[in-house]
Image 1 (cartoon, rainbow, N blue to C red):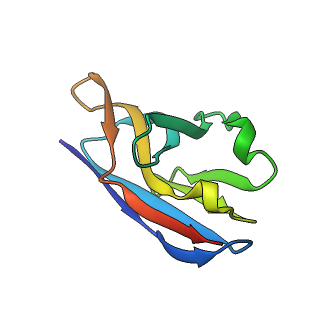
Image 2 (cartoon, rainbow, N blue to C red; image 1 turned 90 degrees about the vertical axis):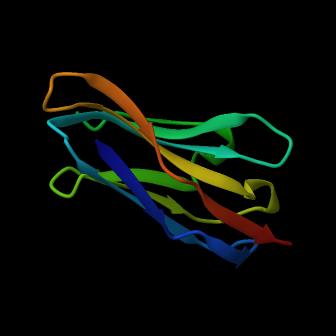
Image 3 (cartoon, rainbow, N blue to C red; image 1 turned 180 degrees about the horizontal axis):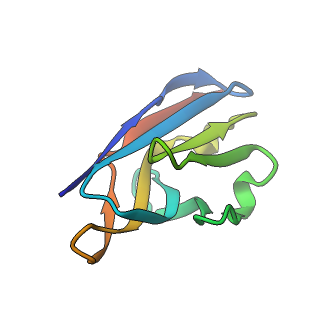
Length: 120
């Protein structure tokens, strides 16, 4: 099995910064895509940023220029650096991983979610 453990959420004032981390462990042969999604109350879960194993990134328009996704392949960890936070960034943030397990199964997993609250 595979586990994802997120950390780094919290309460911050508008204009502040936070860094989220998500570490994957378990039966992992190789990780393809690592990503962050977020879900605000009463809304659907939306993509924030993705990063392929080759380093290609993709961002939601609402976070371009403010958020940066990165990954440490040696640690099977993905990060989300969030700068110039706005109240509308308030949501539960979920990491997502698409990987190949040692049993050759291509699988996807979600983190448990971490709350980010930005006060005005």
